[in-house]
Image 1 (cartoon, rainbow, N blue to C red):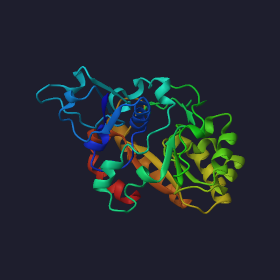
Image 2: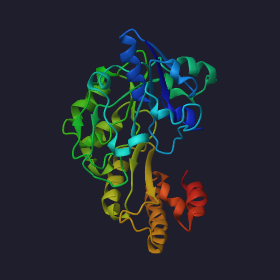
Image 3: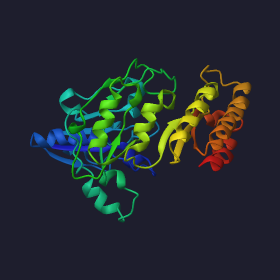
Image 4: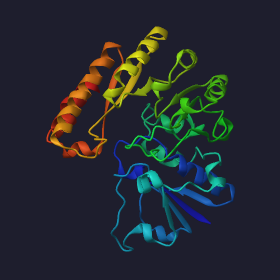
Length: 317
């Protein structure tokens, strides 16, 4: 059986530098069954494969709809999935694939053509990647996990750990929201490998026990949190004080802007959103925390879109 796997974000996004976990799991599963699996980096001649799997994470990643066969997603041998297609309604992978060890070699041939030996493609070379937990209880309206009600155990570390790789990258949605976070964190520490939570951690759940254990760990890169709502300012300030009482290491905060929880997007919102953006930045800078503006796509409809696009971004990035 000949199988093509297409990471649509890799093809359609110029700055995309992170492997697709679902693609690697699908590859590992079908290779185990004896299939000939390739990573395809274009959409040509898809009819030559028994199966074609297309995955994407981002909704704005383009998928070609023209050509000889019209919409490729309608081809009988094509299956597609991911949040980029279905957002918060993305169907899960079959359990036997979801819990199969990722094929970290899937990107090797492509990598050989683009890698200059630097750090640009380190995510493809250095990291074991996976979820220890899934889900969240916050119901944030802008998040793909908004329909989730709790944090649950997803997979054991051994399921995706490649002992030959020096680092671990966790994609967990809200790790500290899991009741057995301490057991999972200790297991990460026990590997002796540096690790990171790519999606960030919920600073509102941070307490002295969590913070002490986290900051003493062999962590990879900056500690990342979020400050999405100015209404959380008193709590965030308390957590920043806790952080700075325990560490001087770099901490980064994603700062959401351009999203109206009311869904109104009126003149008052756009003006207040920018004011609140800079108020949050001011608070973070007082604690030597790096703000990183996360612009919701709706900022493009603001009468102040140029401020979001240029001035605010230049200040904090």
